[in-house]
Image 1 (cartoon, each protein chain N blue to C red):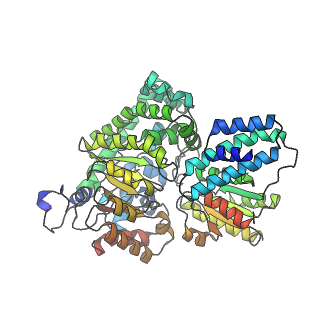
Image 2 (cartoon, chains in turn yellow, orange; image 1 turned 90 degrees about the horizontal axis):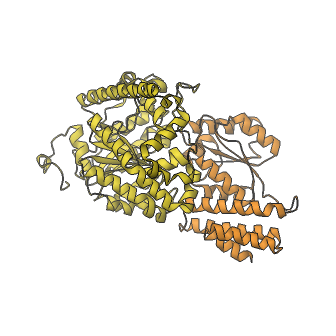
Amino acid sequence: MGANAPKSLKGTQHIMDALQRIETAIRLGKPDRVPVAPIIDFFSARYGGITQHEMLFDVKKADRALLKTLNDLGWVDGLHFSWAGLGRALLTVFPTPPLMPGVNGFPPDQEFQFLEKTVMEPEEYLRIEEIGVGRWLMEKLRLNHPELRSLPGMARTGMGLGMDVLKIKRSTKGWRAKGIEPLVGANLCMIPLEAISMAFRSFDRFVLDLFRYPQELKAAGQALMKTFINVGRMGVMTSGIKRVFLGGTRTSASFISPRQFEELALPEWQEMCEYFTGRGVTPLLHLDSDWTPFFPYFKSLPRGKCILNLDGTSDIFKAKEVLGDHICIMGDVPAALLKLGEPEEVEEYCHRLITEVGKDGGFILSSGCSIPIDARPVNVKAMFASVLKYKP
Amino acid sequence: MTENIAALLAELKEDEALSEVRSLLDSGADPLSLVEGLREGMSEVGRRFDEKEYFLSELIMSAEIFKEAIALIEPHLQAGASQTKGTVIIGTVKGDIHDIGKNIVATLLRCEGYDVHDLGVDVPPASFIDELKETGAFLLALSGLLTLAFDSMKETVETLAEAGLRDKVKVIIGGGPVNEKVVEYSGADAFGVDAAQAVKLANEYLGA
C-alpha cells in the first residue's frame, strides 16, 4: 500500500467503493481489486441504440444508452473523459469546427472527427503575448464562427454552453449516486504546444516550426499557458470533479525528438501538472501514440498525484518498470483488439495487465484511447469482467 | 561536392544546404549529381531514424529541405532526366479524414523517388481502383485512424479482387491502431508501424 493511501484502508482487505478504489490506485496504493474506467460514449451510444449526434447533444439520452450498456455488459468503477453533451462546446471552442455528426450534412451516426487547418502564421507566435491571449483567441475563433462576431451571438452561444454545463453536472451527480465515479467528466485542459499543433498551425507546419522558430513557439506556449490553466480550473470548479484531463499526442516520441520534448514540451507538462497537483487536483495525462522513450521524464512530475494513461501504442509494461513506483498507470486495451479480437484474447490481455502492471497497485484498467464505436460487445464484456476475475 | 550536400541535409541544416545547392548550380555542377547527393543525405537520415538517433520530426524536416532543394534544381534538369522508381497510389480510406500519417508517407515516398498519386481522404474503393487502372501502378497504400477504417480497407481490397487486380497489386496499410490483426482482417499484404517502414515496404515490393 502506498504511503499516501487513506489510513482506514491500511492493512485491510475490505470491499472498497469505486471512488476509494480509484483514489487508492492514484496514490499508488493497492485497492481491493483493480478499478476499470474506460472512455465509452462512442461505443455505448451505438450499443444503446442512439446516434452519435444524440450522444453529443443530449446528455439524458446518452446516459440512458450508457446505463443499458453497463447493465448488459457489466459495471465499471469510473467513467473516463465523457463526450456526452459536448457537441455544442466542440463546435465552438476550436477555430476550425470539427466534423460533427448530424451537423452540416455529416451523417448523424458517423464518428466525430477533428478537422485540422492552419489558422495562424509563425509571425503570430510573438503577437499572442503582445495583444493579449483573450483577444487573439477570439480573433481566431471568429474566423469560422460567425455567431461569435456579434455581442448577441456571443451571448446566445454562452447561454447555450451554460445550459450544457448544467446538464452535464446533473449527469455527473446521477452517476455518482449509482456508485460510478466520473474520472474527469469533461474537465479538459490543453497543453499549449499540443493545441498550437492541432488547432492553430496544423501538424506539418508545427513540426517545421520546431526547427525554424523554437524560441517563438516557446514564447507562444508560455503566453497561452495561464489561459489554458484557467480553462481547466474553471472545469474543476463547475463540475466538482477534482481531476483534469490533459491530452497529448503531438509531443510524443511518435512525432518529436527527446531534445525537442525536453526543451519545449516537458516544461509545459511540468508546469500544468505542478499547478493542478499543488491545488489538490489530479491531472490525468491521456497520452496517445508512443511515449515509451519519454517515460523517464515523467519522474519529474509530483509522485503519486498524477495518472499516466496510455493508448496501447506505448509499452505499458515498460511504463510499469520505469514509473511504477512514481505514477499511477492507466490503460490500455487496444482498439483493434476490442474490434477484431476474440473475448478470450481480450481476457488474456487484461489478465496480463492486471497481474503485471497492477502488481503492487497503482493501476487502473482502461481502453486504449476510447472503446471503438464498433467494438464487439462480447469483448467489452470480457474486459469489464476481468477485474472481478483476476487479482494482481 | 555532393558529400557536402548529403552531410548538410543529414544534419538538417536547411539554410546551408540550400545555399550550397544554389552555389553548385551557379558553378555549373551536374544537377543530377546534386539530386544524388540529396538522396544520399536522405538515406543517412533514414539510417539515423532506424538507429533511433532521429525521430519523425527530423524525417519531416529532412523531407522539407529535400523538397526545397529539388525545387531549385528542377529548372536545370532536362525533361525526362529524372526517373521515378515506380508509382504508388495512396489515400485515407472511406469514412476517415485523418491525413497526417498519409501525408508524411506520401512525402517520404516522393523523396525516395516514387511517383505518388495522393487521392486525399475519405476515398471510396472505386476511386482507388480507377487510379490503379489508369496509372498501371502496382502498389496501393491505404491509411486510416478510426477502427471503422478497417472495414473500408477490407472493402477496398475486396473491390480490388473483383476488378481482377489483386494478384498484380500489393496493398500496404497504416495508421494508429493498425496491426497484424488488421492486415489479416482486411486482406492487405503488410502494414507499416511508421512512415519509414512504409518506404521500406515500397522498396521491397517494387524492387527498388
